[in-house]
Length: 283
Ligand code: NDP
Image 1: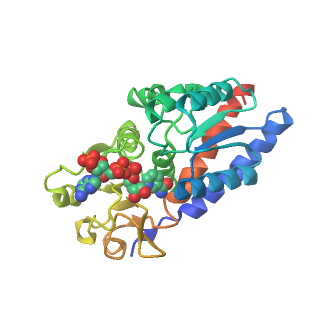
Image 2 (image 1 turned 90 degrees about the horizontal axis):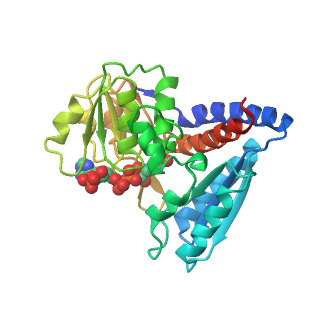
């Protein structure tokens, strides 16, 4: 039976370490600060923002919240980002996506200073990852890499198959795996023979957003399965992108949903914010 990769436990360990680092920084007069900007009333975004605020508070990170009405103009949002870029108390800026339709998300993300881009979405930071010299790395893929390391997976020479090619998960995690000497295949909705591709993988990373579309019998015996998907089925049930029960019969290790990748995402956001603050006093 597969090892269940406990994302909550790994995240909790890292958060405890971060709390200690924050204490060290405070002795030097520095409190890491994360600005979180939410525009509008999207219910899921509100939940994510409140989780981020709570996580900051628990780690001793200053959380600077900006909850703006849905009708906020692009110009006003850009002006706020400019102010935050120049605020020495702020080491990280996060603009919660999706933004209302009248605002150009790309323009907004590019307005964030790359030095405070703790989400790792700015083209400068994406480019650094492409050339193998990463600075801020996108939180979900970074969390996946930390999890793989924690369970002792050495990616060198391994076949990694990623299902999904989004800018926030699929593409960056592919680059991170490549950086660690894996042979990487990125699959998407136009990929032919998906099952065959997945069957060849030593490590499967599913980031699709379709409930249980990666079937359990596609998983090679002994493969490691990382399920990024979070899909609500019915009123309360959450399922991943992988058919968990059946996949677990083949995998050597697998992330559950919930409690796998999810807790790592916010943790890496805190991590990036603390790293940014550390640069202020070179510890
Ligand atoms: P996107 O919708 O941006 O991307 C989905 C990708 O899956 C696309 O590349 C798409 O292909 C591909 N895809 C869709 N259908 C199929 C199919 N039938 N066969 C093969 N590929 C397919 O999603 P995200 O990357 O943003 O998120 C993916 C999942 O991860 C979601 O469930 C999301 O909720 C979850 N998530 C979880 C996070 C966490 O912290 N736990 C963080 C971020 C996301 P194409 O490009 O061709 O359209």
